[in-house]
Length: 409
Image 1 (cartoon, rainbow, N blue to C red):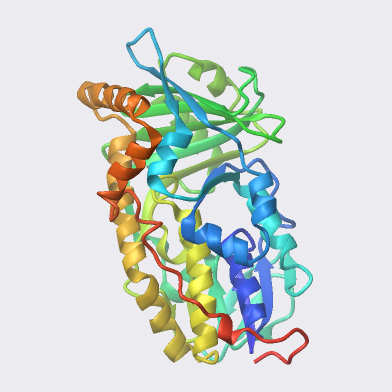
Image 2 (cartoon, rainbow, N blue to C red):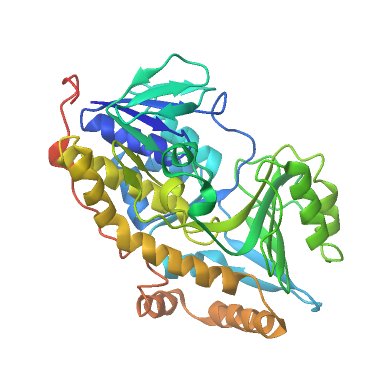
């Protein structure tokens, strides 16, 4: 069977890898002219995703590329002294296996694992998909595919073509995120420094193997902002407005907005579709069920979703009428819990008032005094929330793998 995947970031290459292992013939189309190496931001992989990349044979490369960020210095607004947080202790309570890696590094590793067996088409995009699987492109000649899968992110082109306007499926959960590449003028190495104010957070971190640094901004607003997701000047204007008067290094970081080599801005928005599938088309990762950037573990969820989708397609012999419902049933509870976790995290992460800011500082101080073993034990008592990733059990689809050189389905 011939499968077309839109998107070559994370879910797309993972899905392509496993589909190829199961004997499918895979093409990946990517709008960007090449792999995105424009700065990116740090993302997390938790236990089930770590097991998947281990089975793919790329765990060592991912471990080598980890950011190495282990400490966080927080400067609470209105206080003269910072508080320190050992991130390794915090993350050990969330997951038994965890790696933080720059998104662009992860994409490159996944692409390298698939490029010899998968057809990649860069600098192109899908323009139409018929019920019969006839696909047209902006540049290439039209082709027919048995299955078409959108792995093209929160603003998915495939989802727009098949499921209608984005506004029908998105739920804003109250906050915004921005990331930009900046010179590492603080000399940060394996450390985050952060300004935490009421309704807004600004941070900067440096990571291993990264010559510059990343500035991260999170802020709340009472109502959604008026801008287009491709209108970068308007996004920078909004960022300046919402961080006006902030202390610490914020003015210096904002001065870098126009000279930054990479800039990202988006709402912290969830996707809530009744179904991720229609006919021969389905969605995977952020394109289908983004729980919210920066707050819901969406990268780890995308890796798991791609693995499950490929496995269920193999188990169904490629029949979408059987595979897609099975995929949604297998992953549905994980997605719903990720959404609930993200909503709570968006509220807790950005202090809503002075009481929230005080509680955050006291919570960090308490965590710093708890032994790591006690932190993990306490987190396991609330495993359905804090340890939601580790509670997902991967199915074994190895019996559907085909020998090298065998004809595809």
